[in-house]
Length: 299
Image (cartoon, rainbow, N blue to C red; front, side):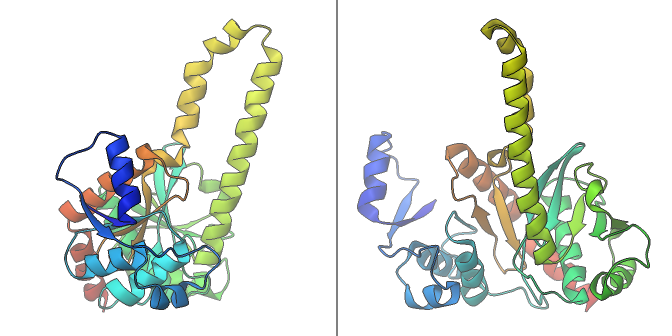
């Protein structure tokens, strides 16, 4: 495993945790890309940032995958400029693993492309289908197009034209799904442009926090003793775990020539462990090669 960053800080943390093995290589990088910087400018100018050093290492074959909890825009820009897109892919997409009533679905694009073309959505569907099958182990995953109604004729020009393309694509196309179908887990792969996808994610995150806080408040208020609330603690924790981002690792940037995963900015050890597992499966299952093969079939 290769870690990029300030060498003295990384070594200090390893010593603090009594790690003295030889499985970690450190590549020194003393620049930091801040959240308020222009992604493309930061990638070009801060060549000794941990993100740029890491992405260049990935491009040169030093590693098989790259994981970062840094700025999303910069990671996407760096992935496109340095690692490059798979031949035939017009736009890379951010994939979000979305907890549902029936398990987990994936949502893409989750924010990389706020303006999209029907052809982009077709490619998102193909890439998402491959990822869902290879990484999540779902055979013939159902692909749904997020729309304002389930009827084929509903929606704006983008989704109407995308619908026609998805009907003919070599995927298990379910058809249109509405927003209320999303938490039910009606499909395995949910396709939309990055504007819609990001709004869905932010709304879900805020709504989830509000519901969880209100539920906790009501339970505490309506149970008279601490022992009564402890009775419900296992169920409460299980419910919370289902919607814990740490359990899902990170958000892959599909469409690049190598696996790149965006971890949450507040990721802890559990989140990084699951992001590493996610990257490992992507490499072992040859997800990139399978996407390239399926995209070239469409071409």
